[in-house]
Length: 140
Image 1 (tube, rainbow, N blue to C red):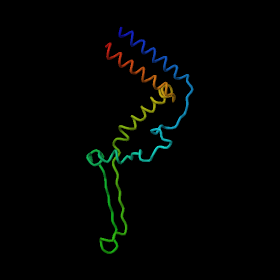
Image 2: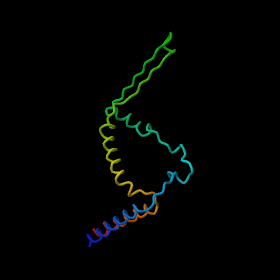
Image 3: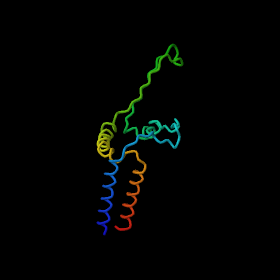
Image 4: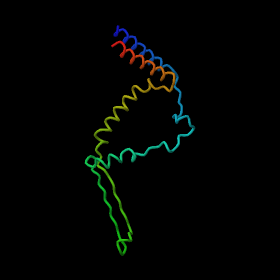
């Protein structure tokens, strides 16, 4: 009985994906909470995300801070100030770049079928996912 339900759900998903490829795609702007323009307050800088890691895990990022001062006369009067702040690239080349390449490859292959801009299709995906979840909870 469970195999029968799983088979029916997989057939329904296959039919939904095939139907989604035939629906005309529509381009719409990014949704910003119903506002016409997305406010600048919604932006998050990379510093807000990474500063905690930079402060708490310097052994990973291996920061290098250099400060050079040129004085004119007494040391209170700074003529030039050169500041250099850098980290060794650890996560980018070894972790993120391969993961990004894999995700981009998969999204190029799958994304055109699954994401066509139709809200009804997205609601259908959610409905089918709920059916699969409920079937797996109640019948397995």
